[in-house]
Length: 271
Image (cartoon, rainbow, N blue to C red; front, top):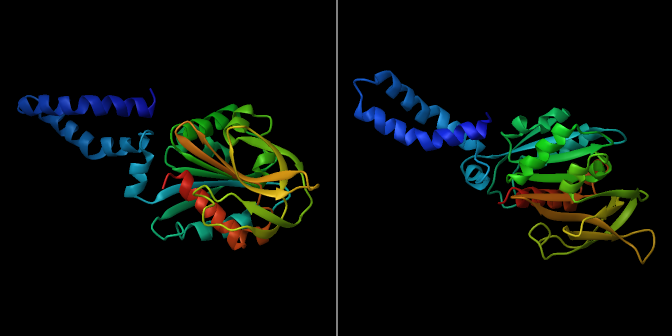
């Protein structure tokens, strides 16, 4: 019996139970107290598992974000701390409050662990997912959760087709670190307020699904070739964003990159 199934049964039977016990108070005082306890404690908790209306929950309390990081060749801890410090300030307008929790434990992607979150940020390199971890994350997004993937995440979990499908693509090959001119498609909420900019970073050439919407590009190794720098896609009732940016501390101190990720978080949350 899953938590969501149990909560659904309670939502249907609780009103009838309460009415029945109210008519037979003397015979069922203990059950009546039990019914009241359900109404006060269990049903409100069950509302957290209502995957059909995440936006309603977020409007009543700060959005809860899980940041999964770790791997090789990057200072994931330092970069993540910079990002968390920035995201805890909330959205660009200052109208939303976000709670961010850092982890390197991939078991936090299991379905039960994700029930308390609204959005997952994945910033990893060359790690693997178990089928349960990949399925937990995919089901989370399908049910209305948000996913933001950054940089070398597109290099990771490559053996897992479920994750590739969820992210929308994967890294094909790396480009040399250097100054990149980023072109911006402003016809989307994530990028509508971001102008073209330059950043020192490492970007990748990627293969991606036809279903993704490309928001940013950069010139690749030849003038006739473009690298996708950021994209978005819908996945079930949820939203997915991915960017190849985010190699080092310099990127996580760059205002354009921080604005991009902040906007992506806000959009993926449905705000």
